[in-house]
Length: 87
Image (cartoon, rainbow, N blue to C red; front, side, top):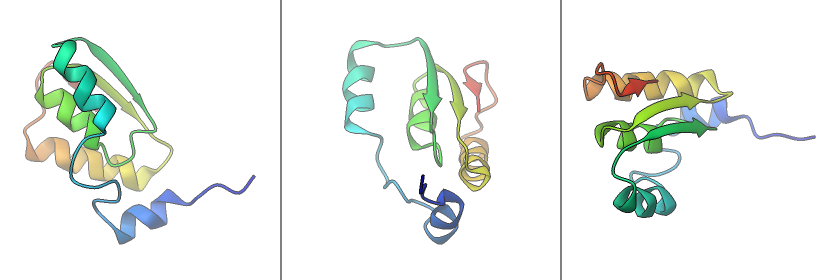
């Protein structure tokens, strides 16, 4: 199986997936105002950070250590240290 090397992709582009959360995440967050989220393949954390800001309890997982490092940096920028943020 040939899998993409996201460590390289994330090093080259700090916003690899863009600047806005996934459309489905936006749509769901309009109806489910709070809850617990498991973000598998979180990448650089775009969706996880968006949901944590909205007070969801978020657990983010990804195979890319570069993506997770970017996610942690983003979480620190928004001071994601509250009980809702498990990144």
